[in-house]
Image 1 (tube, rainbow, N blue to C red):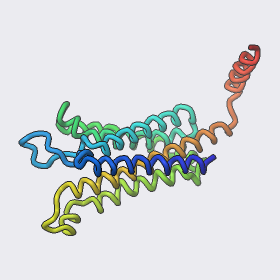
Image 2 (image 1 turned 90 degrees about the vertical axis):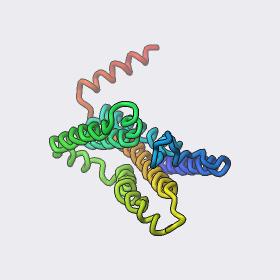
Image 3 (image 1 turned 135 degrees about the vertical axis):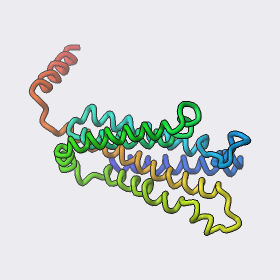
Image 4 (image 1 turned 180 degrees about the vertical axis):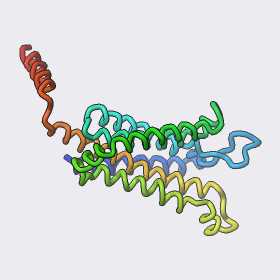
Length: 232
């Protein structure tokens, strides 16, 4: 029942958002949107914030779901792999602070370039299969939500979360935590939409895969399994 899923999406997003806001109201500074990790730190970081942790978890879940679609819904693989690659690239970007600090400086950029190159190469080689996959699934509520999340992450947050904008609006009252808070919370809603779109896309891909004619060998294998289970 799609309406029940969307109700659950609403409740989950409202609860997480409420919990985050209440956390900050009850214990100011608990969201850790702007902390100094050392005396020489000039800019501070929000990487230890619960908001950023939730974002990373969402991206990991999206990547796993897209892997499942690519594994068990072969006809949707040309769509699932690029989106899974994008989720992985976003996750690496969210972990850039830790990769720079604890492994190698700017390592995250190299990893993203490698992932992006592989995704572009795969998409180009599978462009005809991609067109077929899109034709099979479109119109798609899941892909629409994925597009909405991408608009927020790639365009809206980059413009509205731009530091000079808030410096101009607040003037002398400006502090950097304002920009960080606006940017992180807008990114969070973008990732929420990305997660819902991924789940809905997986539901639709599964329904298409189940409706497609199965190869004879697979039908026979499933029949043997069903007969074997029926003996007990």
